[in-house]
Amino acid sequence: MLIIGSHVSYKNDTQLVGSVKEALSYGANAFMFYTGAPQNTQRGEINDLITVEALKLMKENNIALENVICHAPYIVNLANNSDMDKYNFAIEFLRKEIERCMTLGVRGIVLHPGSATKLDREYAIDNIVYALNKILMPEDNIVILLETMAGKGTELGINIDELAYIIDHVELKDKVGVCLDTCHLNDSGIDINNIDSYLDEFDSRIGLNKIGCIHVNDSKNPLGSKKDRHENLGYGTIGFDAIINVIYNERLANIPKILETPYIDRIYAPYKHEITMIKNKTFNPNLINDILNDNK
Image (cartoon, rainbow, N blue to C red; front, side, top):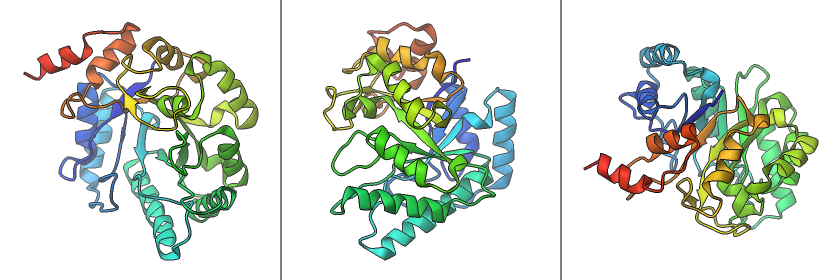
């Protein structure tokens, strides 16, 4: 079964209901959202009545809870403990974010592992492990999905070695997994045309059962560029066919695939048209014009 969706908005007035309605407007059966702005830690109170309405709407439209993903804010950095106040705040905030997700019924939260900044990489990775062991609780009904990163700056989690180390050293291993990102993989040096070779290594080192989400993005950059700039499907260096082969790879079946591709003219969401392309397995060379025409 194809499980496909995109990033959607989450607003304080409509909350999860608004997110579900937006996903349905794209023809999606999965979606990802932030519980607030990704650039800050300001969060509004969750309205349980709205959540109940959203869960009902999801059930009526065959969107399973396990196919709904939250994304932690970009600014949470569990790798850098140079400033212990900021480090402890990041730990406390992510703990609260997990509790918010569980209140909403969400079972997966994507996390950028962090950046070493001026710290030694190995020391910084141990900081991530320490933080996750502080954050995760045995009673949690959620999995933190460490995102594969492009290697920009001092990012961590840029290869299987680093991800495997973190997972191997987290005490509650059933509560940590991985989110693959096709753009990030490409930019970190993984050839998406040979995705099965990557999956073979991933399976032997970590286990394919640990993949809880896949971010589906083309890339503006060449292989191994370490830049992390997403592109619309088929308009980048990875190419539509290579991405389709990831989406329909039998080894990745039943894993939510989430689009994070750029808005057209920074205004118009491309997701309805891109999801149609994915379902039809056919690239639309007029994608951008079609979206602009739809919004005239």
